[in-house]
Picture 1 (spheres, one colour):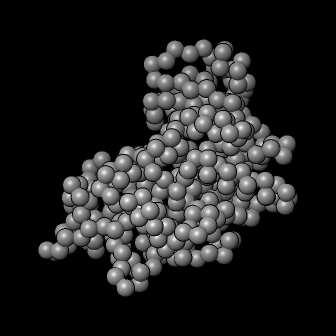
Picture 2 (tube, helix red, strand yellow):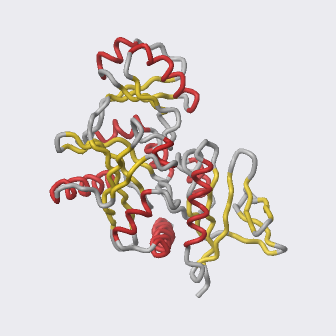
Picture 3 (spheres, rainbow, N blue to C red):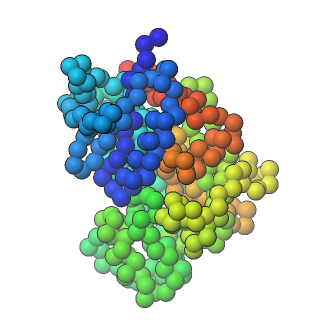
Length: 330
């Protein structure tokens, strides 16, 4: 059997680069090297390189290849682990689609849509999906603080419209805090989403496709020791993640059914993680992560363990499905 050559693409142009590198290390340690030849590819603002042993080898951007000694290596598939731009927002997906290289994520239009929190909420509301009320403020916009508070109440969450890992998020409790919170979020992005506060329990649910089925993973409840699930709670151990979540059978089925519907409505590919708040037995969609973390501290590996699937098997299914879906489009 000829082994497929896999590029584990990590790095990115955002503050999530460190998270991405951690995900890549975990993937490379775990992936089935009997089936795949695996190379770590770092893409950031300064370089596109293959990390091979102690060397960094430049990527030829014309065809996304590199020279190993004198041999030209051409990748069969990309396993994307860049969180944030340009690996989660459709930019790299578009590049790889032009080069005819399959990727383990959603395609360009879906990635572009889902990276925009506000537009994703607007899109899903058309299908009857419940979500927190929200307003959008762009850089340079004039806005009325009184009008925002009258529509959304207090407290509100102010966060960058695109991006992840809770960078630039503020829980605003008074009208006087609003300007500073918007300015903080605008450092991270040119658009800011302001959401009403929903007091409820926080859950997250992974979904991914194989060649045979769409699998909805066990649900995780996130119990944060901080005021909300911020960067410290996510990556510095200041949260408890309970998998499977302590829900009734009916609530579990309701959440999983909702996750499957959202995955299908958005036409997602690969693995995603969907975040919810539960209030009065209603699951409110918060956001979707189309390149979720895969490090040891991440939630998807916890859900896979509870589901009973080894990470090695998961990566094989993810890669094989990307290749198969790509072939079906040719």
